[in-house]
Image (cartoon, rainbow, N blue to C red; front, side, top):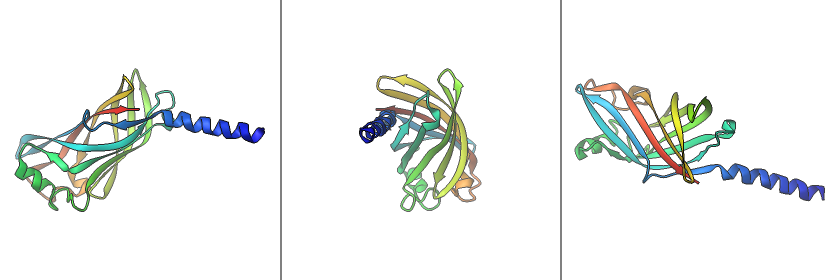
Length: 178
């Protein structure tokens, strides 16, 4: 009888953990960036968002994000530039087809506001990043919005190009549903 109780207890714990898993919706999410090229702002986006988000505002120690975007979906509105960005000069999409972000810790800042510690991997190089985000409850899930700056050279993107700014801003609006 004790074994049966223990088995049911363990299964119940696992069910509770799985109940908080959300799947990122590529169709409803937006991953955008802004970088200066020859002094002018260039806007771009990435699609192909995949990943799981375990999020429970009451249990942040068990919460995590592990998401990727498809480098071949990069879109700046100029096809020739997008193709060049996928080449070895920039993202080397054939060898490194995805960009990954994975949280290591999430803290509450109160009122649906949070702070994330994460690892961002681009082109095989990974760096620790930190960023604020807002988790807005939606039917069957959340919309997570936030952003962070990165230095492209930290990831070996764009080589020593002098016409492109080293720094860019990444903005996230991720819709995740159970």
